Image (cartoon, rainbow, N blue to C red; front, side, top):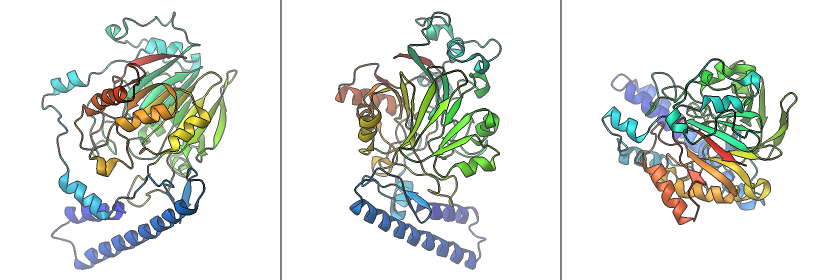
Length: 410
């Protein structure tokens, strides 16, 4: 509902004073059309929820995916205007860059360990240095137990490089400085801790949805068909337009197998989330959104992407838990009245952690691009409070440092 209004408002602002009356009328007519169409779709969605025995299946109405959960509410035009009118600015960001460096420090990934967990053909070439002081208590690459550990390295936003049982996984990749183009979109608070070509080559890439801060077209072109992409329903065509065809498109609860030559077989399962999709004002919800569970014979990694809290996570945990490692969002949640349906806060994230029966979780999607109103350091602070509230022990759910390679035992 907001997409037509947002585009119209932005265009009118940019061209105010020189817009013919018929253009204003055309934009107004288009906005009314989209508002009415959205109203009809939402009415059918509510009717489906009322009469459907299963709210956990994906739902497409008139070519658009919708959330089949009674915990979802579409934002109205008034909601959008109210948020713009009352938005706070600054997010508590320090004016001094050195202060920002202290509060959001970067680490270099432990490239030697990442290579040790990778197959020879995936390893990075040439010496890459890591900060020895960050890993003083780590085993050496020769000593590390590759069979009984998972690695995860948070790059920023929801981008993680994870390794499990010989499989290299990249999630929701974005490495650029701004979300949309080099000159457009929110800017990173801190640089990326490493470049994509410094990491071992991933075997698979999980894309939870197509928002710019979760799907970087430059990364898609860089990796191309050298990896296998797992995407939600409706997104394969976008990849095909980029010349990428090693794509597996999955509906909610659909699963597929992925095998490496001479190695293990892994199960990749697309699971539901409560969110939305779109890369411009005219493709809203034309593709689905999802989370992913990657299972090996001995371990599992859950990649959430973006979501509001809903009971579906208990259903995921009941069917596929326990989970070895969950990658969960903890940022972009204020103001709560506006964000709660599409973004969990740390309290909700801890509830998902418990729903999944996760052995360990890391909190991502914070401190990278500021697109909401909370203080930039609130997510890790609020996470610590939520863990205390729900009796989640220290170390089971943490907000990691940019770039630091973490080891989790199986």
